[in-house]
Length: 249
Image (cartoon, rainbow, N blue to C red; front, side, top):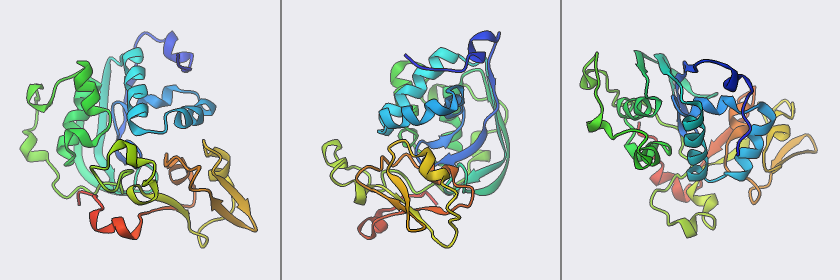
């Protein structure tokens, strides 16, 4: 059972127009991630808290996609965002517009264009396994030749799982090493409390004019990084993990 905006039930069709952006948690904001916008604002934090693992969150997004069944998705990749998106990345001119009646297939193609493997975007492989779409070789692509529009140096975000291949039972124990963590940059912070007030796990607080983060409670959803109006929440990796940081750049 999910809470969605009433308007999504009252319209004849849903058409989405996402901007092509990287995303610190889900790797890509495109045809599927944009549908999280159907969830009313105050409910979003609860979903982040209940589904703090990216696999769980991806499954929820795919359920949302199956419910919404958008008729058309048009991706604006004229100027995309690379790096630590979706709020604090860097504009990247790609001069691309992509469209499909199959939002999941569109994400698979976009992933290929910017250099992600199918499994790098958490919604892609589960969508294929559910039969919602096919792998790249199964899709009909019209218009530009894919080889002509691939971007080999598109910069990825510092991924949630910085070190790949960590067994699931060790992920929690090695969370501080295997995933990037949010850190408050005091020189930029204005103590506006946007991060504190929107933290799903209530892991942040203001104390002695500083934003403090309880990393045992932090679920690495990166809402604070995404929402900070000053760009004061930075993502940092453990020194032991730096040789393995994967940005795809």
